[in-house]
Image 1 (cartoon, rainbow, N blue to C red):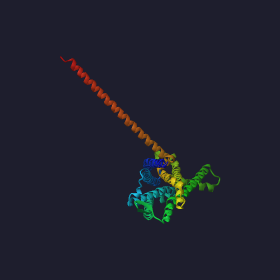
Image 2: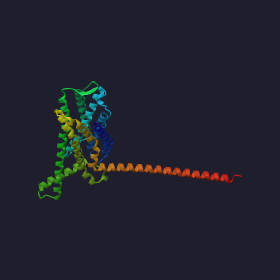
Image 3: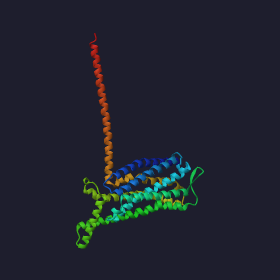
Image 4: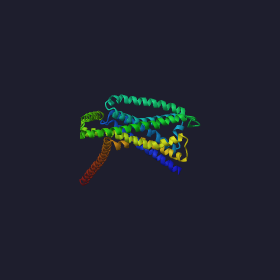
Length: 362
């Protein structure tokens, strides 16, 4: 039974890597080349795909090697003890806060439409990620050197470091929830109010002052949407109107997936930090940890469901790939048929010459 469970966990880890690696690579390429989306939004989403890719390259293989081959990377040497833990913690933090960056960027665009172009720029986006990288690199380097020690050919936690475990838990699990949930709630409520306001304005109002205020608000919203969602003229105006809602949809989809896949492991980790451990928790801990990596492996599918333009480009890419494979196959078959015909003709010609020589022989 234990072997069956370990094999199932190993298969799930391999599945996450096989699905997550190409999915995140394709997501990063399609997002960064999508000119219909605001450039800063694309940068945040590409950073998210990059760190999700790093997560599925580090986390699931570590569990697969541990369960299937009884090889723990952190126990290999003192360098691997600190190096693997630091790298894993850094990538985990950056993946979570890249999603928080998407939420904060959308929050600023919705809350401050007039000044968002000045606040959210490519420069400020890159500076923000550079600062986050420095902060989390420093934090994880110092934390992991303080929490773990390499002794008896094993990487083990030190005694009396519960405070650092709590801080790491709050940074990784609690603070992202406190960022994502309020931002999503504010964006949803604000955009809903604006849609209602726009609808009422279109239907008309008897109050002149109210109508003037609504017209000003609607004009401001339209101007901001045009700035946020600039795209080539051939795409059409209908596409521009849908784009803000698409970005909000993908944000809410990513937030929902994050909560769905990380909340169970967060609860279990909180129970363990408070000393609540039993056989059941030990059995489900590995599965819930792999469930966190599922969040990193399924970013591509969230984009596929929530972004219509992303979905069209993916289908177009697969259609082009299928067509190219078919053309290559047809060309190969035609070449084989042509070579067969040439060989057949050469064979007939050789046979005819032989018959002619035989007939004319005295």
